[in-house]
Amino acid sequence: MILYPLTLLLHIVDVVGLFIAISLELAVVARLQAAKTTTQVHEWLTLSRVIDLVLPVSAVFISRA
Image (cartoon, rainbow, N blue to C red; front, side, top):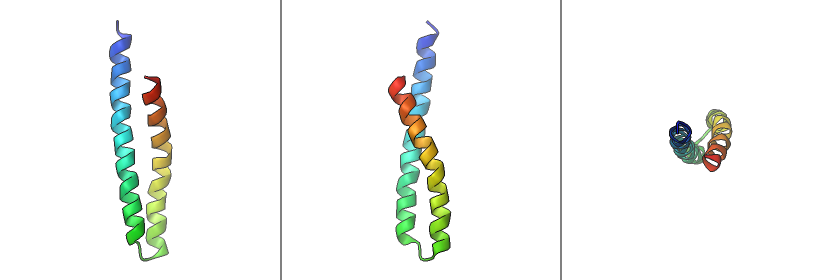
């Protein structure tokens, strides 16, 4: 009986992680369009690398839960 609550918790945490990753991705795209220098583009693309790690992990755990 303890397996269901743990699976539900994992699912909810991953849904929140997925929502955060998608929201940050939209913010990065908006800021890239507004960037005026290559330094600004580089800063936002650095954040995009972190999102590229979080997004697939959250998606995989959501589908498995």
